Length: 368
Image (cartoon, rainbow, N blue to C red; front, top):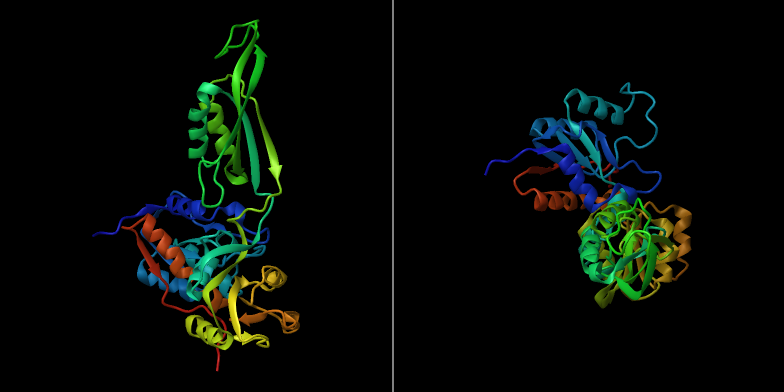
């Protein structure tokens, strides 16, 4: 079957519906880094890092889009002179009209992203977010005539309201009486102008993610029968159960700690730096893709026996303090399967589009 071409913005939309840009950390730069959104893409090369030889690979394979986990443009770019490999890679991409897209900490922070891929490699199921993010949820309360609540609810659910963890179409309603008097300039759906009207109404409450609030509000206004819609929006401090840093889960059975360390070595390669094995068997595992040392205390708080991540500094290993086993497997090793994760997602969405996996390792570290 002949591979089809896609618009660049269609690919970006697919990735951002999965891992919204609003969920990236403040220091990050996940986004379309180079390329015209309306450009036609013939093939995409997926990699962990964009280097000059990755761009060469894209050229050789006829890919005019590179999708990476780590952003090529990370800090402030004040000049573009080819003084380092990152600048050389960007210049070469521009010269060859190859678009560049990065999907980084936003993909780390979603429940079916980078950490989920790591957890599956570790043999875990029933995985949960280790450090759920707060201030991402709103409660939307709207008052609607009893006869219209179902139509309004379904429209808002379709727009993304009412999702809680593994449940959709969640809401709460209570009955009451609304009063209003339409002015001479009004066009009331209920009652008459100039006369106070009473209407049996539902107070309808739904949970809404902040990132889709405007979409839900737009749908709410269009689906509501009233000319003027009465509603309230409340900020919630509830942690978001599906967005945040790191994950944790339990093995089906407790296993020998040394055996599990060998399992990690086999699955991820490289080397495993680890602290004192303070107990013979382990069952609860916590982990974080990339640099996750900041989550060590969180791992302890959920009762993890082992915490797997990368980029631990020498003195940070002492913080295990015979309470938890730290396993540092290296940054590249920790995130290498992100390439397959992104490619799999795109292939499911666009089965006839050419999604290529890099054949080059961008790990800057060698081992003896």
